[in-house]
Every structure is written in C-alpha cells, then in structure tokens.
Amino acid sequence: NRDGVPLLGPVPAPRVCAADEVSTAIAGARIVDVRSWSEFRDGHLPGANWAMGGVGLLMTVGSYVEPDERIVLVCEEDRCDELVRALVRIGLDRIDAVITPRTLLAWRDAGGRLETSREIDADAFLRRIESPERDVLDVRRAIEHRAASIEGSVNVAHTRLVDRIAEVPRDTTLLVHCAGGVRSAA
Image 1: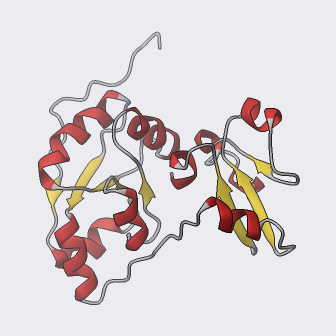
Image 2 (image 1 turned 180 degrees about the vertical axis):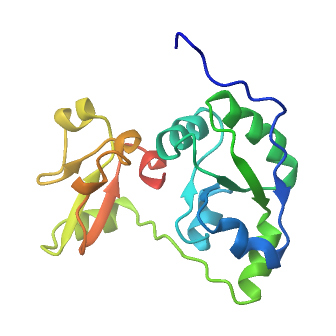
C-alpha cells in the first residue's frame, strides 16, 4: 500500500472475438462469464467462472482471478466497457478479449465444446445427501457453517476456494450449497 499499484495507463480495450478466434482467445486465459445463471448452466466454455453482476461480480472475480492472469469476458458487447472499468478498479486489468453470447453459440455450432452445470432444487438435494456416494461442499462463511450445517459437509467459503482447493473432495458426486444459491453457483 505504501508504494501504490503500478499506473495503468489507458483503460484496456479488449478485442471482440469472432467464432474462429474463440479457441485461441481462451487458451491459457481465465474466462469470466457474466450471462444469466440459466444461460451459463445451459452451456459455457470449459473452465469458465460464472459471476453475477453488481457487487457479486467484484467479490467473485476478485476471489478467483489473480492480477497477472489474462481475462476473457463472456458478455454482451454493450456491457464490455462497464465490466472492464469495474475489473480495473480491483486491479484486474489484463482483459484481453470479449466473446459475445452469439459468438459463443457460433463457435459451438462450428464444433466447439461447451460444458453444462446442473442445478437441483432443495427436495432433490435432500434426497441426494442420503447417498453414501456423495460429498457436500458448503461455500458459506465459517460463522454460517458453525451456526447450522449438513453433517459431514466440507466448509470452504467461496471467496477462499482458490487457496483451499485441495480441501474440496474429488472423484465423488459433489453437492455444493450456500444460503441462497448465488455463492454456490459462483
């Protein structure tokens, strides 16, 4: 803090990708997808992080992206300037490219692979926690977990997942939950 952060210079102006540029653009980049949660679930780039808008955007992206990482945004082109300025304010200024939802679909139609994420309702969650072949990841804050939690759940706050990823169970059905659904989605 004493010396401050390096001067930024001009605000980043990420290029808007065409479908045939998507694979190159995402190689080695951190992908931040700000489309709606339902759109993200239905098809997102492999390894993408979902972030809702507003304060949730900065909290999520600030927790999952390191300042030296190259960022590719998945968003409507008219949101690009707003998102770039928000990310720059928290020290994330390596925003390299933007992929619009239309371009994402064109890339998929040309043979690109999208991943999906499932969401289940509370009743399905309750049925699944009875299974011995599952683990529960509680991404709420520790104080919330101490107040009430699912027996045997692993508690790692969503803002701490990068540093504590080794604690997340692997090779199992992983049920991720929070209080309202936004943190578990991120």
